[in-house]
Length: 162
Image 1 (cartoon, helix red, strand yellow):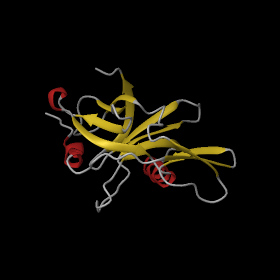
Image 2 (cartoon, rainbow, N blue to C red):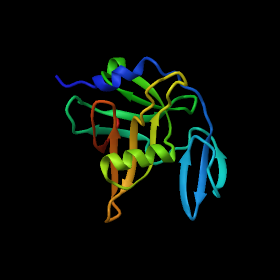
Image 3 (cartoon, one colour):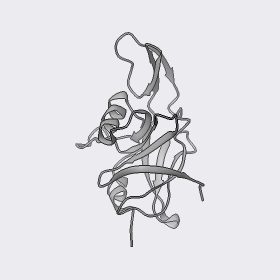
Image 4 (tube, rainbow, N blue to C red):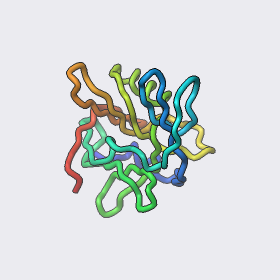
């Protein structure tokens, strides 16, 4: 039976915390990130629960995954990734992906990406890969979604949440 085992390995070690989100506008391009803007950007500090387009449920057609995972807000407004058996859902804390994380994942998939949500790593974590869900558009302006996990990566498809 396929499982969400690659995500389950991550679930135990990451306490959620509320960090600020920064809206950075440079040369007309808007990016949301969890660090202050760099260079000549116009900056606005936002609440951590600002994500918009990536909240929802997804499936991914890749080995080792079955079922639906969800990007959602907690009761406190923090972002989280929920996955696994409905009776015992695992959770990982998320944040708005930084520009560097979005760029790295875009290079991985060889697709232009504009935003994402990634695991909010504990400051003592050694391996801080950009694990999460990312969004862009194709040449026709159609939404493109990607799941970027430790053991597997692939296109994500929005599904109705159970």
